[in-house]
Amino acid sequence: MKNFNPLNSNSTFKAPLLKKLSFSILAVLFAFSSLHAQSASIKTEQVHFEKGTTGTFIESSIKGEHIVDYKINVRKGQFMNVSMVTDNTANYFNIMEPGEEYVAIYNSSMDENMFEGELAKSGDYTIRVYLMRSAARRNEKANFKLEVNVSSED
Image (tube, rainbow, N blue to C red; front, side, top):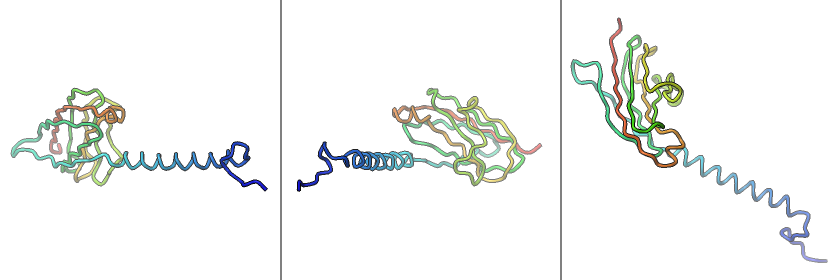
């Protein structure tokens, strides 16, 4: 009797083995790409207004997959205005309500880089500044200027 070799080209077991091997390789590659996507660094900064003012300007930059979360403490019923000027057309911001990590009440990539609205909850709102995935993968840089204004309830 001949020795059985599953990698022998004459073997009927070659195709299933290669399929399993290919699937395993793809699963490992997917796992590594998921870990890489989760590794995008998020820097958090608290937004403060100077005494007697209702707004501030924030000038900064981001590069690649870096993300900045600006936290601003507000009260329900206040009105907030956030606008951004940037030198990169793939640079946007989202606004999340207190307690939210990913679900945005505003996404500037779907609209203009300007939000105006009455706030439904009290607490720390998040203004998340980021680059679209395609620009982040190319390690692009964006210089931006955020203007944040909050007015009292009327």
